[in-house]
Length: 393
Image (cartoon, rainbow, N blue to C red; front, side, top):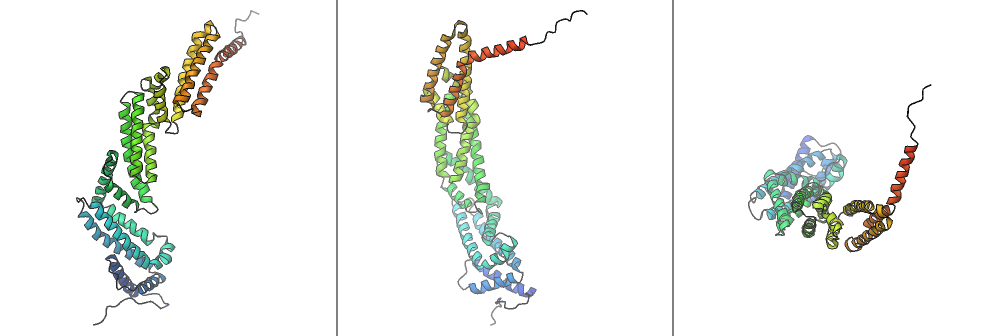
């Protein structure tokens, strides 16, 4: 019986004819299909390399490249059927992982046997290499298939909810691990999965902030927000890749602190009441929360300054008519209180120290500033031209 024809090494210097290209590709296609189905025992890799090189050297690299993609798509179609069969199965993720691992193994062997294609055709034409092409196809044919994608989205959402409840997150973490491996230089993970995670959790954090504001108490908001942020930070750090966890925690702090800082401080004049009633411990709670974000201490300094300026000017108005000593005594007492705030509530913050000192410097020169302003106004008034009636000529 005659043996089936196979493509041999092309030693001719003349270009391959169309029939030769077809014969060579048919041989290579058969080889790639065997690789796709783990039937590699009797393959002659030297012969494969030689025929790939022959196709590339005779300007038929596109036939091999596009044909390889078709073989991979055919394989992925079979794999997708096995994945879809487990959509309602508890072992769905396990099946998806096995499919992914098997496909990566197949793509790795194909990359090796087609390495001449990579050097001689793919680079020249700036195409994705075989590995990247294979992963792109896996995403398109498996992960982005509507039924599979819907199932993965559901697992991700459930995983997010479970992470918040500190339940078992194994299925979720397995999904994250698999999807992160699909990225070319991590782009899939960064651009799709990470964005979904951060966006979904941001909505949860926004709702939590509104829930805490509805409590109607600065102190209650601060206490519960600190507890929530501490608990959520631990869960996020345990459940997510480091770079993603950092983005989630940044969103968490922004939504619960930075975005709401003005509202938090002014709930029923919350911080002002703490300052008026010398609530050392309560102010420490506020400081510890606000110091978690870059602009938090600045917000506290602004609120302290607003209160101090109003208080200092009230004292000036109250005591200026009966002499300066009483005013100075009140200012000194106020300074002692704020020194306590600084050391016992605000951890000797340089930002708050600088702002408080500037405000007290302002008080001590307030009378001088007002007198100077009055003198300036008098000079301006005296220098105004006389617009009285001119005498009759």
